[in-house]
Amino acid sequence: MSDLYSDMNALNGPISTSINNLMNLQKFFLNSNNFSSTIPPTLRELKDLIWLYLQDNFFTGQLPLEVRNLAALGKMDVSVNQLSGVLP
Image (cartoon, rainbow, N blue to C red; front, side, top):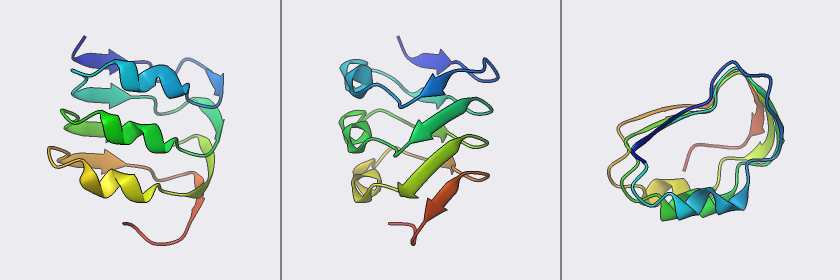
């Protein structure tokens, strides 16, 4: 699977750490849901990720430093959450 679109589905809870099993994932859309908890550092395993959209949820904490290792990442939106700190 290269694209995962699960936006606007009222999904909740944390993002499963098993998401890193989708090694070929390029586009990841979880925006406009009710996700909470922190953004998992296991996202670093998604080396082919080019788009990451997590905006309009209830994520807390800081954006994982591991996100800076996603060399292919070209677009990311984490706005409208409860994140703190600086971008890595």
